[in-house]
Length: 175
Length: 308
Image 1 (cartoon, one colour):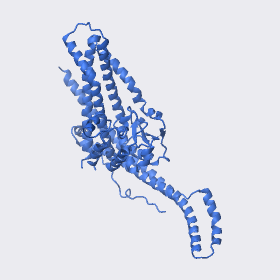
Image 2: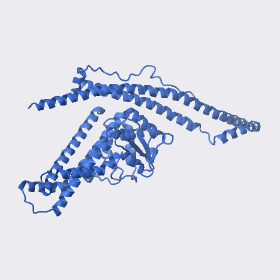
Image 3: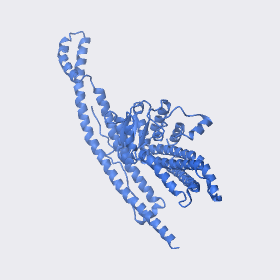
Image 4: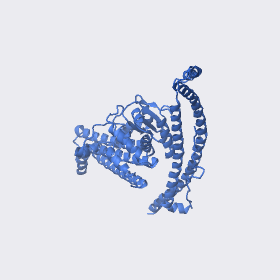
């Protein structure tokens, strides 16, 4: 029967095509995931200075009030007349308390920390995708029988993720 | 310590074997039942017309729950879409893990229930839904939550909703055919000439009609348990930190509150068995384990510790 070798041949050809397509498409996906890392780094670069300045602005607001309160308390503890100081402080304090029913410095810093952790996670997971995709690609390239196809089409090894000197430096926050 | 990639491929092989066993069993049962039904219906179509009909009916029943699985979640009382501000950890963790898995971000829902649990559904990654209870979000830390969400996301990545739907169609098919055969036996005409082959198939068919629905369901549950292990391994592959999931599982299993919104149809989707307090111990436990959608939490934790 001539039909059986033909069927086997067709199956082999389909298999070669699918393995070849795996290499080509995952090469594209590796490229896309590299771009995604850049995308997340850009997000981080945009986000952190903005967060920093808004939190700083808020904290300086609170810092002023606290400073005045401590000053007044110090005056009282020394036994001097603090009423003048307090009279100066009270209107300012009222304005602040009216517009901010509670001092929220703690939660503001807390959510800043959450956002920082989140953005770091996003970059980390974007890199992990690149690492996983490259690993899959390279494993398939060297393991039998897909290595035959890789050799046939001279498919080269993917480099994957390498942390550069500049990238390993984390942006710092100073409050 | 075991290499995560070896565990992953071992799990894939085990899962494939059990699915193949299931397919072979279904094929054999359908063959025997259709031959036995042929005894009543005539052999011309070999009873295959009946099989086709049963397949259509069974498929029709399960298709809705498969195709609209993401929208059915909306129907669960109290499930609302999670927003980034209110459920920051849940939202961002799911978003980040989806980046890591190379999947689109699933739709996220929060179910107002104090029992800590979570489930995933949806016919493919594009229609995936992950739903967590408020109890889960309150009780777990971000790292633990990461473990749970990664487990659910692995279900999505492994197309477990699709697999379970196909399996459910097959189980329904067998149940229908068996049911028909038993009814025929009671009400069908018995005056037909009895051929020896036909009689053998009829006897075999009746045995299969009685036993195979139970066996098929047991295999279905075994598949479900195997997929849970696979999702656990997938979670570790994604987060690279088994401790998050371990401590989440410990916390969840210590909580004895049963989940109100769960029913038998969705039980296999949850992170742990939502019906708690029904688990037996010892040899009774082993037997009742056969009927569980999830492997015992202790076993899962042990398997996870092997990967630490």
